[in-house]
Image (tube, rainbow, N blue to C red; front, side):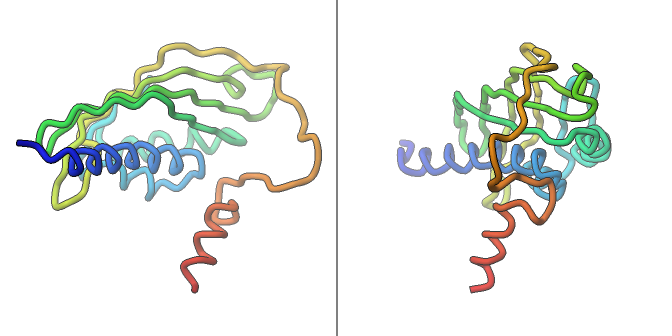
Length: 171
């Protein structure tokens, strides 16, 4: 008989793997991206198939070519099978960069992450990922300048998240 509370906790831990990956990509924190995979994990992206280490080296210069990205995840369905799981996560990825007239630097895409997850040594992580691109739309001419001063995200240790995390850690 399965323990519903244990299953709920496993599902939450699996969703956190997906969220950690998204934060890593958006903040250019490639150690965080790598932590979402088990060693030797496999990734299948548009234009790429290989190990997590190869993926990080492939995606690093691509992401650095954007001013920013934002991955927003929605529907998440996880089918647990003991210490293995299949997780499907729907999302939208926003990309922006220069020149603003370049549709390859300014677009939104709809995707699904279809992940084989496994728990090893008490840690859930990706064994194999299929990053399925469902659609892409150009946002050329659609981006507006900020409406005023205020906090802005950055793709380094000065991002508000990392600043707060350090502050709390120092207490």
